[in-house]
Length: 364
Length: 208
Image 1 (tube, rainbow over the protein chains, first blue to last red):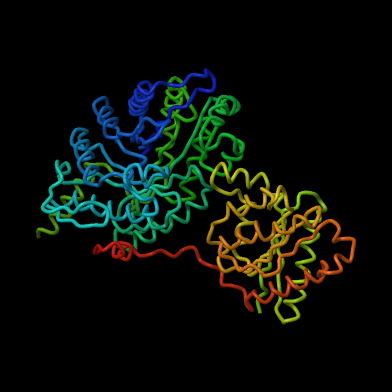
Image 2 (image 1 turned 60 degrees about the horizontal axis):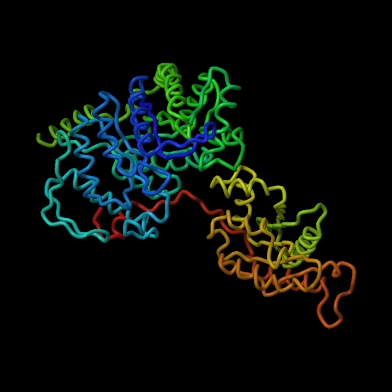
């Protein structure tokens, strides 16, 4: 089981000080969060990709490359990489470079993006969102697995005899997750390839995501990648902790009200009731996180959104310290009763070992 | 035989409201008409006032709370729909529109809908034709030719001697709705269909 931090990389005014970070400060803050996340024992740091204000993370591999140089162990990932509007050739190359320089500590999550104008800004049509996600990923998948690619599709110029460079580290492509909030087609896509499926269940009641995850598990088994319990599932989560829960609610409320999604909407208490958000003591975060497993089955990756609503770095680092205390407990609890058939979260050395095993079988 | 689902959406704000009163009259007339054809009917009434805050939260948050979800599911399953709104500022009320804004735009496709409205005077009555009818036409619903408008006066008079009075308009609209409704309830649509991936690839001209 892997635990990680994911951030959307927005700049918002801190409601307590009235001050907003500069772009440089926010980017440095994201790097500092990643470094600290590694230090307290998280396994994954993931950044969003956005091409509009108030976001700063428009170039994830630049940011992740910088973080790779400052860390040793943490997996660098995305939440999400826009498979619709980016050229899949550029994704193949950017993430392969990152994968080499980070020593394999790279995976990525495909998403379609939810900002309408980004499609026309990148020369695409939002009504083709799903077909773009399907075709572009089919090309990316091929570029990382086939040395010389001939390609013709609807959405980019054809390729003849093209080799995407560098080739994936050790011949093993970065692991891919597919993130979706609504689309059954994306759960089906993840299952077809035997890739991971990530349910960012922050913005919807959990029942909605149970349907998507179950579909993905069923179809994963249908496509012969293993039994449904072996499908690779990731979930979102969001937490704010203080030693006692009243302080957590008091201190988080202004940041909650300052988020783009929740501000002006339902109360913190209602949102905490229908979504994975936990605002409370470390024990409450442990308890709620453990319920995800009951809802979705044993899974592989849990990402937490922490730096929301214009929260300053100091507060985020305090949160990470508290996470450092609960992570060992979460690991122990998640390991208890986990069937041996349930795979661990994907890491490069294991993927390399299983790839070489497959090759050996084929050779003989 | 399984009963038909007749769903009533009332956007009246007071309790009791003349909007609900009109909704109840239309419901009763439709029920009688269906039963006289040998069709049985279950009636579900949705008062939007009770969902006003949930609807606003759905607007900001992007998903419905449990009570609103249930109302949306009820409307989506309806075999026939009676919708009644007060006329505010030349159109349906904002609450009425917001409810239909948070429902999936395909949920009403092919669904028989009776449109009705209330207002202070008959001068507002064409709002049915220039506001409600286009809304439901956009949603590809089957709207009854007769829309029923009840002005305050309609509740206490025989009405205009040169036009049908309220009870006869109610009966005519109810008959039209009953005629558009099916003889048996629609199958509950399963949401677990998935297009196999090879088919999705093939649609783009690629092999699986």
